[in-house]
Image (cartoon, rainbow, N blue to C red; front, top):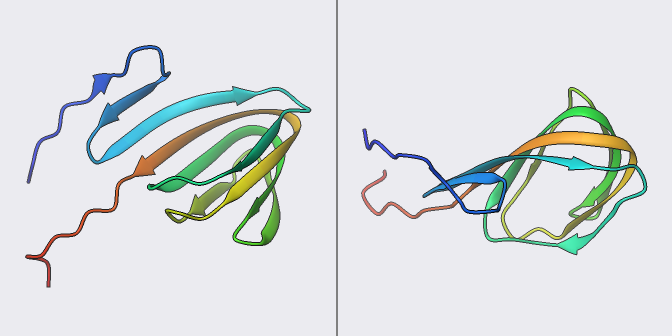
Length: 100
């Protein structure tokens, strides 16, 4: 087991430690999140509210209690229909040549 200490990333609202980032975000109703992608897998836990998301060409309505997974590199976007609070985890993909 490798112990990894979390350190607060200045002014970002999330904790950073390789190979993951964790944070909580709030988006007001009417917010449009433009298409984006990133190098990490993303898991989002919707605490409250409603948003309409499109990822990998598939649309879904996400509500409080839902969990979403977006693979690294996949373009995604969303429109917030009701105020949303969510927590996210961004997971780095690492290649371990010793894994079998």
